[in-house]
Length: 227
Image 1 (cartoon, helix red, strand yellow):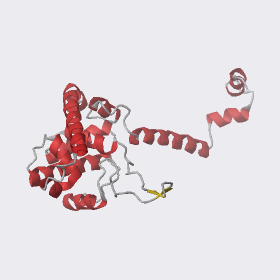
Image 2: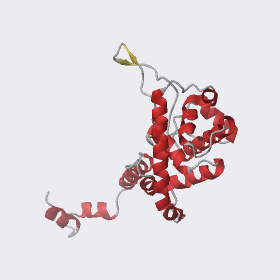
Image 3: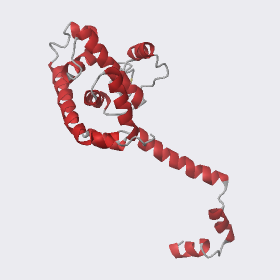
């Protein structure tokens, strides 16, 4: 059917059944449209940012993320760029991120090497400790606000137990990866690959810090953004 023929059917009323359908659609059709719209909205809200290398672009795309990051920073004294750089490294802002499964006989998928999950890649046991320590019993690893609060909490613990400065992204990441006990025992000493990654996190943290300086005032002005 051509557009012109459809126009005649709907607008000129040549087919009253079709006209009635569009003027007063059945409930199932309204629900279908609502479900499609909600699905599209949630997809935008939960997908990874399009530009992960620009913290301003991230926060402008994900309206509620800056509010969560600021709250975590104020609560734990961990700079926003440091926390965001750690999350970038751990999951690439993928809320469902998990380590790839091991392979059985090089073909069949086996178990995962760890229980790391979500934005922060927190392990089951570490996440349980965080929830108990903070009283945030309903926290989810695939919720950005909870995940960045976890990173801030862990960085605070690294400062407390390891003496790492809050803006030292390099050493904070080493402690994040090795654990506080491992960091104090210097288990990273002979891990050249890990120190290379930590340097990358530190570099990205500095880049994020410089970027945030140019857009933070604008982000502060988005107090009305509800999501």
